[in-house]
Length: 298
Image: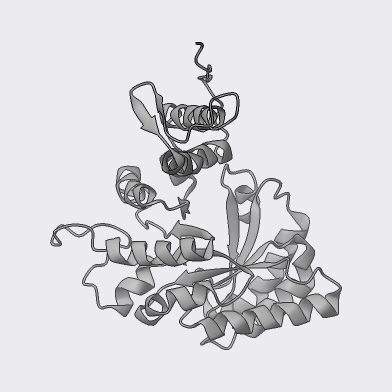
């Protein structure tokens, strides 16, 4: 599985030491992860390891073994089931100590915090600001559903018995904390891996809120995720036109105007900020412009 993952068109790959590893296999799994990081070709991908949560006996040794063994080839450590900012600070301190001992660049390895229970959601802003290493806040739906006694066995799917999206508040609160901190917000997995339509339905909801992406558990979900979290070509082109038009009209050559028309649309500084979001997502997705701004002629 780790070998196959290296060739998949995903932005990030995480090697798991937590839920996907049986208790008796957790200790030998550390060596497999170190070997995969050091020997694999992860070009173009963010390399992450999810350690066990801090209430278990495995966490500290997970971090020490992986970072000492493959720290140069590791971008982030993912801490699952985070409940308080203090847990993030513990990981930050341990990473710093290992980096200093091993001669690694101090602070380079980031932290991804996974929100999977009621206490973690209550403290999500504290968690987001707990360490300068924080790069991503992730929603973990399965454990969260169990944490709040949500009566469902379909992880990540919408309930036909609820008049709306039962995850909306959770997703938005995580998004709010991530954006306040200036880091990524990532939606969690959809476990029915053959149901691509169902995956798309829930992914489009978090994408509409502004999430940066969603976990995929199977190669069949990757294409849908890449399409859903990237802007449409026409929206990307329009965003780039807004940026070009606003830059020109606010320049001396364009008349130093702060609010102008682009076709039938009035654009101003707020328009520019919105367009930066769409254009940034399009560039990150590798989109190429299909429209060019032409300054008006007098």
